[in-house]
Length: 286
Image (cartoon, rainbow, N blue to C red; front, side, top):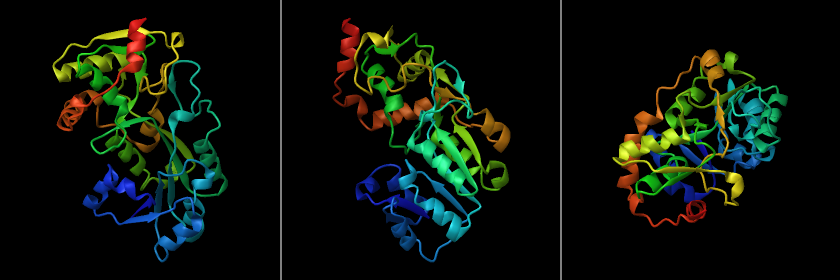
């Protein structure tokens, strides 16, 4: 069963419009309202809960119900790797220093409930039905139009961009391994990475084009958020803990997936979309 925040507009978009294909029972509810959630699932019981909604303690309404009414074997929380502080370029590990974020507060809240919980901190995700395309489309938008790709820094920053199937496989690996996973935090990313520069060239190869790139010092510009899809500095996670504790391993690689992803982009007519490259033009004009 799938509980979805009560926003009907979502149901026309990926991945929500595909749930019926999976035979999932979809229930719309205000997931920040514990009483409403209880009424919507009254009479039902669950062994595992996967919470991909909570952004702070106030919206983590399922936790108490999962513990007190269902006695679940595992409560899996989809957190965020965005909480890490990355003062030094390196693959971030689960014991690394983090900022005070809503997701971190949820992790601490779950730990206080004496609940068998596990937290996954995903980073950049792509897939055929994900609704977040900016990470890869930024590169294709430019290469498909024979434009220069302006890359901050030296372009050697690694990007941990993970297929959603590998993300799902890691999270679902908790089932049957609840004791190993209980009380643990896992980074959710791939060990098959590309640098920003390599990603440009990989996209260009699939598109049958030659990548044109230039690098710049981000501190020289005041650019809006989204001018580049990743952080200016390297911001990538290590997935070694999930591999050693859960026996998980990625089965996908971005290089192998780029052909179908690029074709999906073309089939959707995104190469014909009118895009203004205002930030690029500022960088390239200097």
